[in-house]
Structure formats: C-alpha cells, structure tokens
Image (cartoon, rainbow, N blue to C red; front, side, top):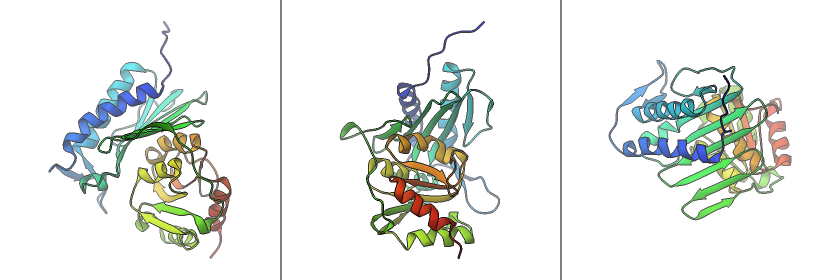
Length: 264
C-alpha cells in the first residue's frame, strides 16, 4: 500500500546538518583515533566521519525509506531509487585532523524528476551554504541571504582554488598549471570551502581531479543556484566526480576548459 512522503527540502537538510554537527563538533580539535583507508598513501578517516554518516543515514531512511544513499564511509544503498542522497560527513578530513576549520559536511539530494538540493555545513564557524540549482543561500554569523557568483570573464582577473598539486597525475598537473599561470591569484587547500567561495562571489574557479561523487555532487546545486557552472574537464556532467571545473562565470569556464584541453 502506497503512502505519502513529503518531498525533501532545505529544512530537512538543516536537520541532517544539525545532527552531523552535534556528533562531529565534540571531536574537533580533540585527540581522536585516525585510521588510514589506503594501503599506499594516506586517506584518513575518524570516528567523527563514521558516526556522523551513520546517524544521517538512519534519519534519511526513517523519513524516506525508499530512497537510495551514496556515502563516503559505508556501502551504497539502493542506487536505482528515484531519489538519491549523497553524503560526505567530513569533506576535508585532513583539515579536520589538523585543526583547520575548512572542512564541511556535504549533503546532497537528486531525484529523477529533476529536483536537486545541496548543502555545505561548517559547524565550527556556524556557516551553511545551500542551493537547489536555481537559487542559493548563505546562513551564518552575519545573517541569512541569497548568494550569487561574480562576473569575471577573463582568466587574468580570476582567483583559482584547488586542494593540492598531488591530486593530479602528471598530465593533469600540466593542464592545471596552464590555467594557474593565466590567473591573477591561486590558493590551495580549502576543500569544499573553495566551491562555496565561488558561489559566494569571493572566488572564480575551482579545478580538481580524482574526486568522488560525494566530493562534488552536493556542491553542484549550490554553485549552479548561485549562477555558476560545474562540469568535468570535457564540459559534461560532474555528478560522478573525476576531473572537475567549477566557475562563477560561463565565459571564464569556457576559457578554462580550453586551456585544460590544450595539447602541450
């Protein structure tokens, strides 16, 4: 027997963000155990990551039992569902374990009907960035307001973010450097905050590679809702991660794609 279930909205994303924040914050800047998920290299995970995702999953399935969930720390569930939740409890675990408040909880939702929602919550600073692909908003210590990207059609005036050079392979790094050498300012190491700064109109470009869907999917509705654009390096959907470009200006985006695709 079918039953009515309300459609997900920003209010529920705020509930999930509250839940994750209550779990994560007592462990931030505290001595906690750190596991390495990689046999080669370093991909840290903590109890904060795991506990926050576990509780968000439980809350989602209690409200939307037919939906699917793709998360960072646990196996995917029901990926063929019409509604899909994408969760990264701590995007920027390296920052988290270093005591830097540039990590965030990422919560995304996509329905086959076209509905999309995304949120980045930073509970230490009390900031949230959220959008639905049409409109985007900021809520934080200085109030709540709609946000939009800024015009910046030329690379020579742009501020560029990436996480770190080691996220690129050798060929990708050369491509990134072609863009980096053309911009006014480049900054490293702010994880999901970089994308939110593009949505806020404080930066212009983010170029990354080796991303998982959970790293980018929740951020797409925020940037697009603020008037920006997010694609892979070939100009196609970035939902599945990999090589990603996010821009606040469509003309700038095309120029960045051209340099990324240029032959050495």
